[in-house]
Image (cartoon, rainbow, N blue to C red; front, side, top):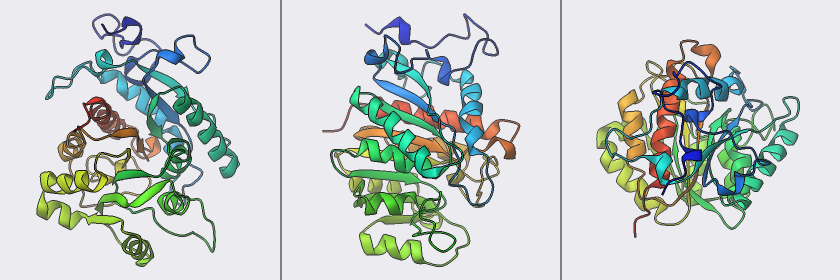
Length: 320
């Protein structure tokens, strides 16, 4: 029997425009809550964008994503899954960053997630810029390197910015490989496109066995074929999913700091998530939603719809 405490508030009981917004109208269960030990999947906000090098704003993402998530209902329209009755899900709140100190913020994020992992809770994160993924991975990969399926228009594999700045939203996965948090041979990056500084990031990928699927290959082969390869690369071992909203074409998701034209539409953005079912997903994130660039909230609604898809994939039985 599912626990009613962890069920979201229904729009039939309280209008969606009323009440204090939490992710998907779930209960707010911080670490000192008596039911924290009963949570199985925790939705977490990381309102932090100090790794941004051009257009800041994703620090405001979790708040707008929570508001948009009041539109999410209890049942998946295609699979019929009712995730909130499958496991105990809750909004664990936000990590409190230090907006004046990148290193302190990353330490705070890792400490927050270490507590979540120690409690046996799988995290589903709303960022924040893409540097957010690095301190999260530091907590999740404590027992060994993870595989990763990464949806993005950028590789985020650069060595440094501005003559040696090592921690930006363009470097998290370079650091994650160097720190042994990711097994590069179990990493695939899908949707890569746009103009380039040079080939340094792609050279690093090729040298270390990271598979890059450009947007041209993605469209030529199709979602089913590409995602079959992604599944084969990560296999049955523990895997992280990182989803940058700029994977999606800015026609459908303009609210992001580094948009790149020529990407998937909003339906295709959901389809790739549905192909994740059956994988051993130990955590996932949706990053780079930047409300200042889309005050309509359309990008945020797509973002939380993607989060719901990833949640359902996380809860599907693991193949084999």
